[in-house]
Length: 119
Length: 206
Image (cartoon, rainbow over all chains, first blue to last red; front, top):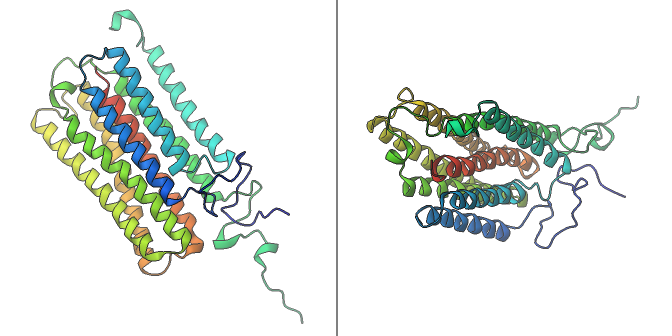
């Protein structure tokens, strides 16, 4: 029989219980520290590549966006527990992100941001 | 005459006062995620405006004249580490460890305050260098975006101090760990927004 009376029960997460996951379905303190170390290291790399003048501008921009995406995803999945929580929360947040990105693209396109005359 | 006693399992009330819902998820947590999703649109609009007007200022100062990347990098690191202390606070209350809960809540609030202090110092430096919200489009979009983010951090610090106060009064037992989790979600959201701001506004060359 399934228990649906507690607020920390896994709800259709699509994940089995991972090693190091607590009874609340959240990572252990050790895992949190590892994630934080990774975040700190990626931030250090971001700042380091910013000062390497030999890197072409487009490559630098791509590298920075990728590293930022890695940090963003790590915080959302582990610290905000979206990796472990219900799919409902994941979809809710993804909707906000997708809408925000759509607004970003629509506004830039409408204002001819990509037009060569604006460069 | 028979009396009926309230049995939480027979009514629409879950433990710690949370109501049963069709999804099996608590309303408070769904509401927080819905709020965060809507806040994505707010910051999306502000970041879009900044990107749209990047490099369009007719008069200076311009970003490369005033940004202090090493200084902002330290601020970013401080805010990132505050996310770690926030999850450690949540972990502590879920174990019923009130002492560690208070230590981590206070540490998170302190790190948040350091970040805000850093931002106030940065704003002051920029104003001294001639950049105000009225100077040019860079100043307008920069101060509005980072100002909104700073306000979010400030509200987060107030919420953290409220939790700390509740814990001191014994009003934040282990059963109410979801309250800490909700404040934590807000705090991490503020962190991920800064991750984007740091890259898009400070690091990516104009």
